[in-house]
Length: 362
Ligand code: SF4
Ligand code: SF4
View 1 (cartoon, rainbow, N blue to C red):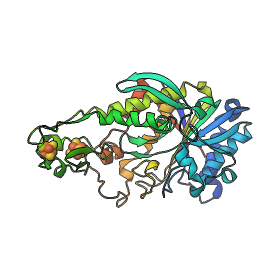
View 2: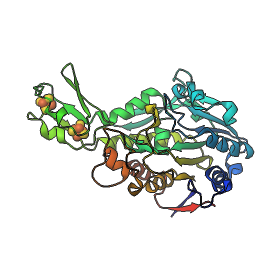
View 3: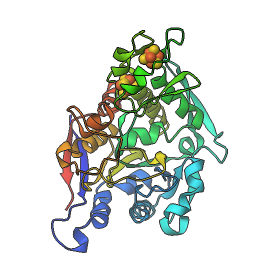
View 4: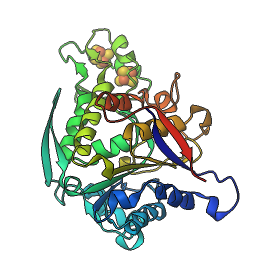
């Protein structure tokens, strides 16, 4: 079985306005039977509205096109994200006047409006799903594709797993990774060889206590090998646990909808190495690619990652101290984590199909 993923390219074949991305996006959304999916439904458009001084979230003009398509299909759309991002969204150009739909905090103003579900994976016993999402009839997962320090890539899976839960669940998912670093203080002499041999500046010491930044760590094991006293152990499966946790949370979010009421739209534009939650923007790693859409999250995520090619890397776009090393996908070279693992985990949970056919819109 093969899933369909549609593609609106950001690289126009002709120099005409109607061959450029906003118009192709309209045409592409028109192919997905929005009336059947969204008529008379309250449609949550879940996106990351960013924070701080970041300016690489999806452009309000493009978000407005998605809102318009839902309204024209007879749906009742609203935008939603964490209270933190909603509070400052206006500064980045996201307002009801511009977008044509209200913007609501995903789990209430104080992050307490949630529904708790059991998942029972390592320390992730339960997840608190955002009430605004659970209450919606339908959803468009409108994601910005970019790098992510813990999972290699951040797209639709990350938008759901990290963005449709409260802060406490987000913390628990991240700690699936922290739990894979162990440091035995009784063996440590404070020689700092681990810190000095870390090629990614991931290790710091404060008051004699080690701290490993899991976003920066590439699981190279240099610190483990450099330590003369075997004080550090690292479970290299750590980032897989994180991605499994994301997959399980994503499944719980999607289970609250009838499958035919969810669409995934991912913008492969201004593709930076870090998640939008860092609150700042660095140069694009590759030229803008376009926007993909589909109703199979596994297929859309696979297509998104496949379209970001290491060969398209723009020299000079990677801010220090990041550097590329090794082989594999561009994000694996940058973050040391295979970005496809989150997809494999979703596929294992029968959430979709990695085989896809990419249909370009013209
Ligand atoms: S495993 Fe490598 S990247 Fe991670 S903290 Fe140790 S030396 Fe640094
Ligand atoms: S290399 Fe080992 S002994 Fe030296 S500071 Fe690091 S953990 Fe401690």
